[in-house]
Length: 226
Image (cartoon, rainbow, N blue to C red; front, side, top):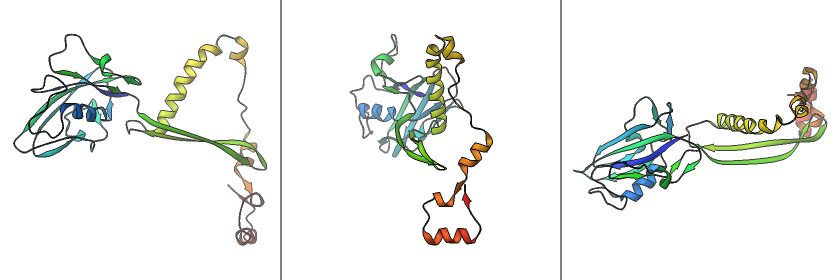
């Protein structure tokens, strides 16, 4: 994912300062900046800018970007600025993995007033799973896996799952290649088309229909449902 790694606010030299006309202090602004959901279409670091004049509630959608950067959660609140006051800031955006604390984002020789920010690169905020019994046709020995994936909007859930599976597979392949037997073994059984069709079509006697619904289906000549 992509995240802000540092911020420079005009007229501010450290994170413990306050900004005239701004309700929030610098620490609160930095915390809000961590919550910006960013999508970067380039591998190199980019600069994004904020140039606002009050009165207004400033959100992530007020950040100025080019075509290489997309702000996903434009309604994300950053701070409030009063009438007659202005503020300008420059933020650095990078791509990365996982979570990187602010101390690791500090750059030697950076201009005075550069404030390092904790970077939350992972677009996945929560994953939940549930395994429950399932019946396929007349066979009730199957299990059903349900995955609930919550993201920050920079990636869709199915893409996050696919990429995670690819990363896991690439890592585990290192162990598979240790043995020729394992490398050549077939572990997944592909069912033929006839078997698949039988699984998809269930006879109504196996379904939990009410007596009235069951009789109605029978009178209509319906014996299976997909």
